[in-house]
Amino acid sequence: MTLLEQLEGELDRVRKHLARLTRERSVLTEQITRLRTGARADDVCAALELTLGVRIDLYLLNGQDPEHRAAMAPADHGVSRPEQGARRASW
Image (cartoon, rainbow, N blue to C red; front, top):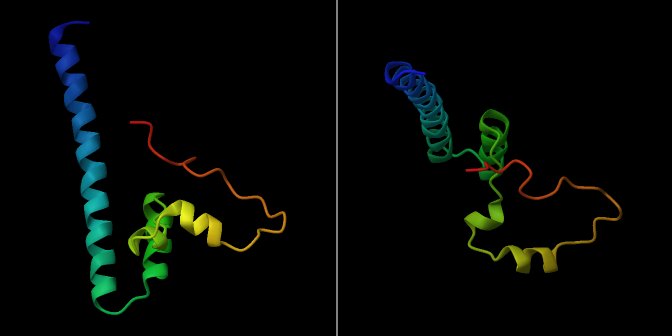
């Protein structure tokens, strides 16, 4: 692979990354506007999870420690939950 081909491939990768970031910026701006106009925080978090695939737990926004939350959470009564971090980016 020549240097020219490598640089063209890198440019294509950067273009795709920029397009994804531009989309995420638009979604975040929209959700900020919704919050400022009175939307419920849990509705906005659900929309972000649906649109971007990112889960934002409200306890993190409230400054609570995740371990404290787990200790205070009611029993799940056998309900299985996906493993935390399963959707986290690998970078």
